[in-house]
Length: 314
Image (cartoon, rainbow, N blue to C red; front, side, top):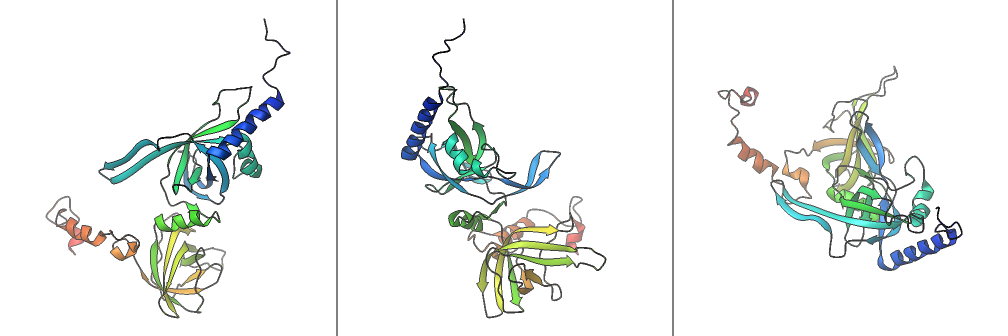
């Protein structure tokens, strides 16, 4: 026969008390983390993958780290590609607190529940973790309630995403790990671009017929002033608008680069390419030139080699 209708597990006051106890435990034994929802810039509708994405928001919320003896995963591995750190962790968030701090801003950028691909930043260790699975049914309907999210995460691998969260320690981390191109520039109007500003350089100028032209853009990460009119500027998040073909910043006395906020006029006199060790000034172990010279003694590019490249001999 059916269960007793006078004894119910779905009493709202009991559920609220249950959730209050969980929230209190999280605030006592948990850690403050930043929740960063991922925003898709471009999507591959065939493979269902994000071509490019960014993180514009960061919400602080308390979370309990379920791992007590250290991070899970395979740990530190020495593979043929070098040292790989494969840490994993499980974070427990209160569903009510998540709705208060993150879900309240629910719009087309932030889903109504945590999503795979979003990021958690743990200030305690200075590490970023990407959500790989969201478990929303553990504990399983105690008091007919689902009070928490259990987020299984793996260590985040940076893939040139943009960070603009207005949280200094998060945005500064991108400057340290992002791929940057160095540009020696001459300032034509003594107005230097500032960090975070976008600069653009046209490769095909706009026309009177309505063409918007083709331009390369990048975000300024660092400005090193050499004189009153010269500087070395480091840019990241490099992209192109107006064409599907790849374009790069280039040396030109006619087509200068311009800052989109300060309207600074920059004549590029040198571009540090990936063949130069100087292009990785932040990496003291960069040895691009050494490897290139050593490779010339291993790979035969001579004309007599049927698999070689004759153009290299001219």
